[in-house]
Image (cartoon, rainbow, N blue to C red; front, side, top):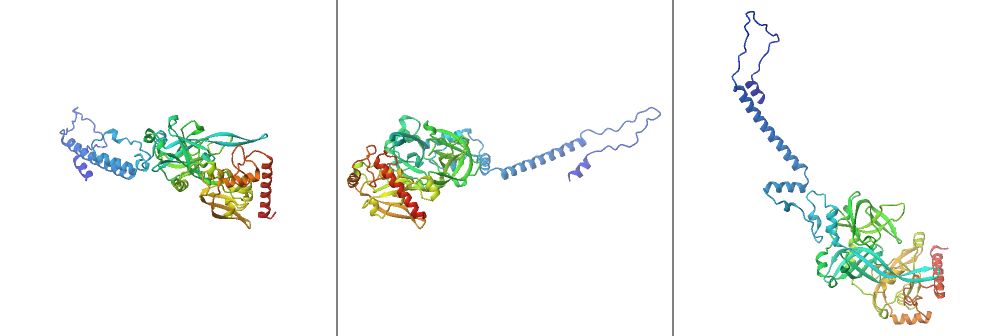
Length: 499
């Protein structure tokens, strides 16, 4: 159509291939001039119509392309712009939400998440610094001495009930602690006493509780409960942010990427599958948060590979692994350390299972029973020498000291479930029995008859009556106990492996 119209309206001037020579009379030929405006008007009109059509086609292509290739969040933004003629610029800015609401509902419109500074500002109120105090034994050439020790770690606010604020951390942060305190905002005025509500040493997890009545209204109004993310959707290369109490100096932020997933890491004879990251995780960061770029918790920082030749290898417990364990620990009864005159006794002497024995002989991690008191609480329940206690009242036990610190919260006369492993024809079998803890008076009296003294430093009776301090004074009696222990272990290996 357009071609025919153009051929009809446009005037073409035909030129002969031969140029005419001027006439002899010297008169110059003049071409007939065309009347102005006749063809030009039609040409301009056709050009205008053509340009308008091309513009409409171009706009249509752009609109279809935007609908096709924009992300859903961007499409919603475009649709909103089409329906709203005027919008205040301040309404378009996405505010950082309170972490008590799901951050999945507040992802930025571009779909890329927040900046590191946004995440730090939004999530730091969910992270706390944990300080612990306890007594540690130091063995030297002069014997074993006790001294006060102090440790630092981090925690994540993961819940709240009617009376308590619940904080998740690593078991190794609070293991063996006699005092636990929590700092909410790096201020001495925000330090509050806390209690260990429950632990799981096999997964290096623990719940610490703080009484709401001990927290000021100002602090309560500022703290937040962390939003739990989905660690199963994390991919290698994803950017992450780590927040924790590095070196005990207070909250700090580092960032990096997910270096690997399901890394098998063995710590204290326990092997776990962890998230590996190059975000700096230093001492004190344990128990802190590993966050995705939406500000969601995807891991609990647990360990760092420490070596002069290694850099950027930190590990975190995936939240998918931690959450069901933490949910169980949060429902446990919060206990206080029982006074010595009310303390319950299991009636055993225990020793740690060394890493070498565990790896070489396949002995389960736990508290190895070097001796069991005759007619004691454990013996009455059927527990024998050589058994390895792995759980006490549902709490995982990975060492002798952990069993000792756990029993310290139970009174005499309480009945608890004790899980232990027993060797049978070259394999370990798991057993669970109910044990009624003995009265402390009977245990102390029995201990006095056997040893005629008590440990002046720990005040705990020994020799099969209660859980001994692994590093007690090197007295002659203890040396005999250790000799008996190693003899028992040798007899155990001979019987178990046929040596």
